[in-house]
Length: 241
Length: 241
Image (cartoon, rainbow over the protein chains, first blue to last red):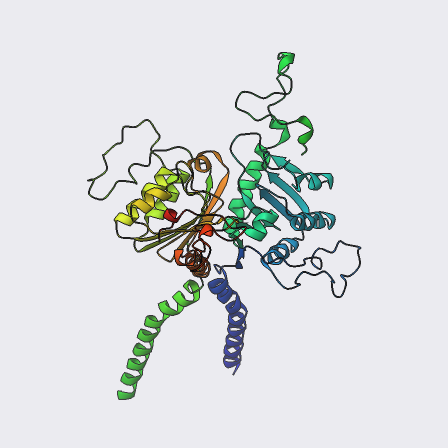
């Protein structure tokens, strides 16, 4: 009788353990290598009102119905904005050209919400008319750029170190509204890691401390402010962290 | 005795069946949603010799050791060439700018091997000095292009309807050797399907039959050869299938 009781207890314990472990094993088997979110957005985007998405904090709730004449449905741009505005902790931006006012407002909004934003861009395009880079710097967002002749031609963003947004799209109104473009949104740990490593590599390489346009001590005064041959000159006031 | 024999036979049969089914179940559990190949290539690429990869069919085996002065190791460009040259049945190219001689040779090589190659490109860039588009057309590869003012700014390829190659990289020597660029290689059925649908949509839209620069019958002779206002004029000899 006592032996039977032990047997029943052992079976029950085994069953309980198995039931406890089974979900984890199944999760490992099914979930461990499961691909995450993969979204593809094609452009040109329909021109829609994005005001409801871009309400600043403290500006109160969005008006029940915006009265502007634009359509208020979903568009490629609103989908991209949504992916960006999902950021809660960090946003790395590595963008050749950035002049879209809507995307600029979204990045400033995230900065105001306390998201840690860092921007890498191309020196030849950041000072063009309409560029958002100056506004981002003015808002206190750190921006770094290249000093060389090759383009910093990436167009990617990493949201909360978990989501990669990348593609052919430069963040300009011209591209968003007129060009055939693609943007991939991937929750893929390997891809995110590789793009974050590339971001940190470039971020360090473009550290203003490494800029070479200040002559070494003792150099001829006539060279003040000029780089070596073949290098683009960058004005000193354009170099913030 | 007979009952025992039946029991042993039943257990053996059950065991055999279980062993037969188990691998399939495991494959379903582990493999069914397993993400495929995901490769990321960053540029600029080291300049390396790619002759061994680009040997034409019938040219005999590649020389044991190329004597040119370039390094002969792996580079970002050679990795991209390898992904492209893996094509056995079909290659869709949707490229804003295409002037790299090595990538041009790779595409011609695939065409010679019987791979069905189709190219979509941008009308503003295809006639620039150094463009590969004319050479591809001369080789018999069908090319289609836009007629409008927005750019066909995609930079993607689909290999054998299973592998997507996409990113920021225009297929030019300038971009390959000097720019910071990325290329993603994805064996992802959903992404491939969406990009193939985009390719077919554009392929049909850029069908020369749809070009509008021929005036409708009965239009004034003075309008011969011109599109409607706001449309780029395309010379008639630039429109091959």
